[in-house]
Length: 230
Image (spheres, rainbow, N blue to C red):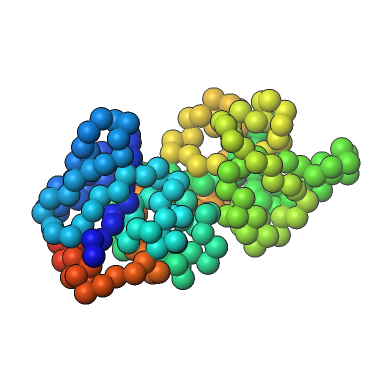
């Protein structure tokens, strides 16, 4: 059996993943054109490279269709319920850093903390007759986080495009999104609540707990993990 390793299919995440493996003696490359999702692995036998979008990798790991995968911790935790029972975190790769944060309009001078947001949400519903809207792509993580911190009077609205623009476009009152530098938030006149981020995420190598492995596959997996130092 061949061990299938899922890697982001394009951009800096793919390049930095290739570099990380290469520094540990496992050379990976994309074969064919940019439109072809094929790749090659050198330096360890029995490993097949599978190029996928970062958002697809959690699903493929959880389904057991790939054995290993590199993706963001935010995507694993958002897309997989009870994620730690389905995948194992093997190594943080030290790049792809981003924080999942809650942002509110900078003009809200009296809203700086989650307690302030809770009070503002109650006042908003009283004044407008509907719950304060928070635009996000991270419904599971944000819902759990707000429940843990006692924020109740809100509704999550799905954001498919640029989340930071939803407040300006009047489709939400606040946002919850990934940010690296905060520049886009500031450009859209938003500020981050003072608490620690909902999640500090980075690119991480995960192993599927459900993918089938025979003796040959286990040997390849062990060899690869030894070479990578994980």
